Amino acid sequence: MLPDHCKDVSVREVDFPLTGEEIARHTAGKKAYTRTEFIILKNGDEYAVLQVFKEDGIDLFRPISAYKVIALPDSTIFVHDEEIDVLNRSRMANVALRHPGKTVIVRGLFNHISFAQGSEVLNLLVTDVVPPKPAKLSYLVAKALDAGLVDLPIVVTEETIDLNDLERRVQTPVVVFPCRASGLTSEKTVFFLDETPRIEGKATLVGCDLSLRIFQSIYKKKPEFISMCPRELVPHDGKKRLVKCCRVKEGFELEGDLAIVPWGATVSDVAQAIRCLFREQMDS
Image 1 (cartoon, helix red, strand yellow):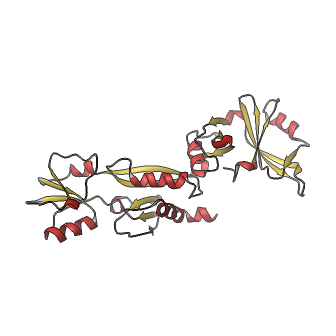
Image 2 (cartoon, helix red, strand yellow; image 1 turned 45 degrees about the vertical axis):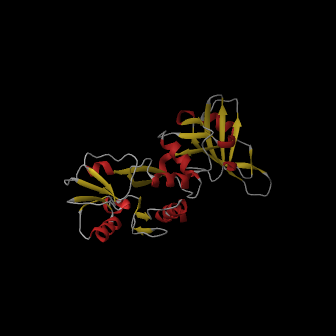
Image 3 (cartoon, helix red, strand yellow; image 1 turned 180 degrees about the horizontal axis):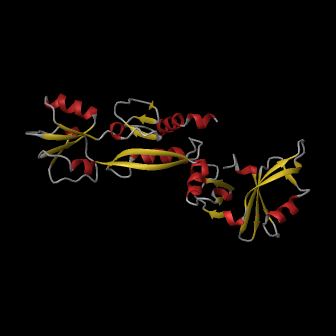
């Protein structure tokens, strides 16, 4: 649960105990602003959250016809973090997820206040190759979500394919990577395909379909090959995933629960792919 906007949330400081009985007694006969859908009651360090329903009409303040207790003090927690945009559903979902079973009231950026419950978050697995670190795709996803380009309560889990782990499987004296990346290590002779080195003897290419075709075009022979393509390495287990693939030239492609963006993806590409991946939730 997350209000559509912090303008829908009213905060009232009160001097009565935040129990069900006292809330009922003090809410009877009260009015609420026309836009108010939720009321946060504050008594010292204790909080309660109500959803309110108002009588029909055109007045700015209308009688409360009914209400629902969303949370009492024993199930609420207050977080003050000026880095959190309370209008950002993903950021709020991540905050709520850190406090399972609680209604999390957040005072965030610009002192705006809202709340969230973490029972209906959407999980996205982001799989990318490292090094370098951080993984570029995870960085682009964070940018897209922080910018509010995907208005959903998405929680991201990063999965990485470490080139150093793949390198340990190489049996030849020479290993070739598509390009230099800070953090690559090897006790073997290492070459980088984009530098078109002179390669003699047996070599293993740790790369993707495109780099394999480039290798064969340059050297007129087929190397030993270990794929580093996330598209090929991720399981098809029904979980929502985002990966990169050099076979995608622009935009994105969708294969069931797998969204694929180009190796040189932009924030816009990533945002569009995520929206399509969760299109049912976007439409609901």
